[in-house]
Image (cartoon, rainbow, N blue to C red; front, side):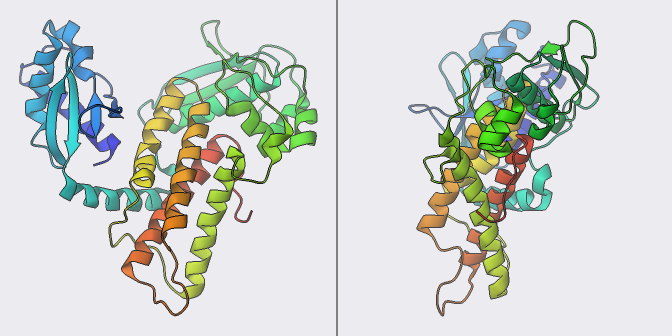
Length: 354
């Protein structure tokens, strides 16, 4: 069971409780589940009972009990506990977890760059505008792409004179459109630097990473360390992980076999990172924070290299391709898909060779 599956399961339990008149509260549009923090209980936690307690005029722990009774029997759920003031804590069924991991890998590979996208905000129009400053322009474009992953429509405009050099950073230049209440994108400025200066010194990809990787309220470091070809540079790490994933696919093709998740792979960090991808996109879109995507890509890349360096996705020497090789390859390819999709949303290229 993925976090998205668990979220839908809990939301269904809320709807059931309301339909059965056990809970008198509005059904939320979505339910957020998070990985349990250190010292917590179970695999995932959810605070929806605290959210519904006020409207339902019930103690949060009572709301949690009502929902627990309707979630506990769901497929893939091993145990549901109530902790603290009313948090729901979920432990997944280990036997079902293996099947869920296989389904996750298949979903990523089948959906490709569409993995993690949804239609939650279909029909919603968001108007973004930004000042005539390079970091604000780049951030607005990335936020627009993220909002579209949730099914929304976006119009982006600038409040002042635009810089033709922005087009080198994949910024679509346009005048401000929409009423005053449209959302303003105003990060800490990158200074007096122009797009032409940035791309001339760093190139487009490194410039975009340098502008987007820090949170909007932090300064954007734009030094030459963005060009370092080593794993200490997060941008290189992410792009190199994608290139290695693609190289594994090419190597398998030369050996005459393809990836297929036939046997469970012991890579919990990578499975978790892939499963978290839809939630990261939703959170980044909701908070207008593409830096969350960048940090997530770093997590995926590190987990990929843990798999890459500790197992052998490809046969060595006279070794014949096995179910284990096919499963490791499928998982590595799924990681490559998520890395490519995340880089695309940041406007950054995902190289086949590096």
